[in-house]
Each structure stands twice: as C-alpha cells, then as structure tokens.
Length: 104
Image (cartoon, rainbow, N blue to C red; front, side):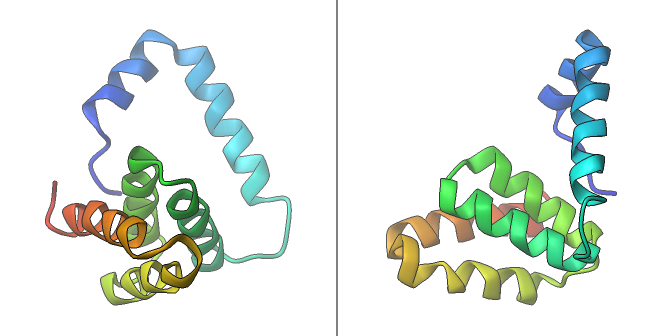
C-alpha cells in the first residue's frame, strides 16, 4: 500500500467512526458487483478525472498502483479522457497522477 496523505491520517484519528463507516461503505460498493480490482480501479480513476478532483485523482492513482496497474496503463486511462473532458483538464489529471508516480 502506498503512503496515505497526512491530512487523511489525521482525519481518521480524529473521527474514527466516520472513517470506519466510509471504509465500510467503500468495501460494500467494491463487493456489490462482478468487476475485478483492476477494472474497479480504472472506473474510479475515470470518475475522479471526470470530476477533476485533485485529491481523488491522486488517491485513485495510488489505489490503481496497489491494484496492480502499471503507470503506463494509468497514463492510458488519462489519455482516454482527452476527447471527453478536453486537453487542459486531461493534462491537469495527468500531472497530478505523475506526481504520485514520482512519490509526491
């Protein structure tokens, strides 16, 4: 598992019940259907990119790596967003993702 951001770790310490409920909801969603972990990671990455939420893109990049996707597969997922969300937004998502690959 990749490094969890400090802000998220502090939130979990301060609000353990909320953090546990959030993690349980996420687990239920993952287990609700037939998609494997790699497919789920790509779907979640696509949603984060489409929503243009930097923290979610970074988080999903870490989780995609944990699910076994390669940086090139994740980059390809970013590229697929180009014709839907536009070049500037795709480039922003790619930059945030590259930060994760670089360990930031």
